[in-house]
Structure formats: C-alpha cells, structure tokens
Image (cartoon, rainbow, N blue to C red; front, side):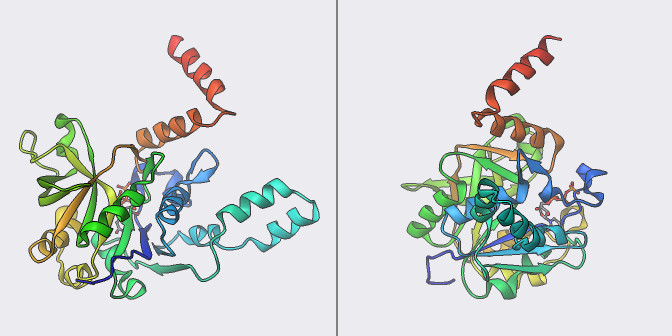
Length: 293
Ligand code: UTP
C-alpha cells in the first residue's frame, strides 16, 4: 500500500455503451449529454478539481472522441470570439479549460466492464492512490463528494468508498456496504454485496460511484475473470483487495443523480435548474402548469 496520502490523479471511465440512452448515444457519448449548459462529464471533472485533483485520466472508447475535443482548446472558436470581442463567452471557455498537460486519454478497446476500464488506466496512474469517479453519477451538494473523501483519506489512508442512504426496499438495485466501527468522519467497511436479494442487505448504504483506491487494485484487476453480466467487475477485485487492505466508508449526504438513466437525467436537470436564478421561477411555473393539466 502506498505511503502517500495525497490523491493527485483521477480516473473517469467513459467507455460504456450507454444503451439505456439509445438512440441518443448512437453518435453522442452519454457523458456529453447536457445538464443545463454543461455536459455530464464536466460535473465530475469540476468535483475532482475542487477536491485538489491535478491530473485527469479518461478511459474512452470508440465514438467518444468528442470528449477529448471538449477538454481541448477550440482554437477557431476562441479566435472568432476574440475578434468579435465576446468577453462573457470567452470567460466561460477559460473557466472550464484544463491546463495543458493535465489530461490524459486512453482507450478501452472493448467494453468488457468497469473493472477492465479501470485496469486500462494502470500505466497512467502508476504506483499511487487515485480517485475514481463514475461520471454518470452526478452529485449535488455544497461540498463535493470527493472533497469529503479526500479529507477522510488524509486521516485513514487505505481505500475509501463513498456511500449514500437509499430506501431499504431499493437496496437490491445497488452495490451495498456492510458497516463496521464508526470513525470520527467515516466508518470501517466490513463487507460489500452487489445487488443483495430483497431483505438481505447488510445496510441501506449504497456505493454511489466515487472511490479512492490503492494501486494494488490493478494487479487484481489484471487477473480478474468476468463476473456478473459476464463483465469484469470492479467490486470483485475490491473484495479481494479488502482481504489485505482496509476499506473505509464516506457517507455522502447530498443528492446523487444517476444520469445514465432517463429518470435520473431529467431529475438532475430539474435540480440544477431550480438552483439557477434565471431559470428557477420559470421552470417551477411550467412544472405546476403541467401537473395541474
Ligand atoms: P454503466 O453500466 O452505467 O454504463 O457503467 P453503460 O454500460 O455505458 O450503460 P448502459 O447500461 O449500457 O446504459 C458504469 C460506468 O462504467 C463505465 C461507463 O462509461 C460508466 O461510467 N464503463 C462501463 C466503461 O468505461 N467500460 C465498460 O466496459 C463498462
């Protein structure tokens, strides 16, 4: 296990097929669908930057080139906006422009599962702990989920998994953790179950798509055979890693929207719109009008 407690790098697996969003995702990656005026992927990158992440690693796949373009400098657009003196638009571009050399892209050649996508980042991460953010899971809170996890990691080291409360009757839809001893900030994780049978979940805390992992996960993923859904599952390798390294839970108390599903995506758009002073009133009025109809 690495002795550093700095988390400098974050991995964003964006190679999934996004079948739940077809036909939109035939040509447009689901991570580029927008919540208001920002693509879904931007929310996870902003959360990582706010948590002190310095290097952003994207595991992409076929048809995902536009994600790389999104984080590049758009020279022609920039030039045209400068010539037209469009200051506000230029400020928006500058705000989201990563510093040169702080992004890396590698391709998962076939969508063999989340575990395999993470393994594809092994050389770019190297021998240090790293953050893993599933960009579909868009978090809304004043304090970013990853920022809280980094604070916990500075106390505990080991591996951290973010969790969140869900209704007990919904636990069978998620990966759920078993909660051990409480710590000052988080708690020890003593087990993890992927989609437990109804009534058997060890807690109502589901794994919400944010992790801080030690680099030893990579050698386990390398040997990991296919699991549920015939995909290489991250959870299977985390369970093996948990036999030799501690895992801690961070309890996120904000809201998470699963933007890989239509329902979550629409809810996220509504939630962010209600926070936007220019949109809130109009959207609320329109919703009440539709409900009354
Ligand atoms: P999901 O299962 O939510 O993504 O994977 P999916 O397969 O794209 O979605 P559907 O079910 O077909 O609609 C969770 C995360 O893991 C990534 C996805 O991009 C998403 O961020 N992933 C999944 C990969 O990068 N590679 C894979 O082989 C599978």
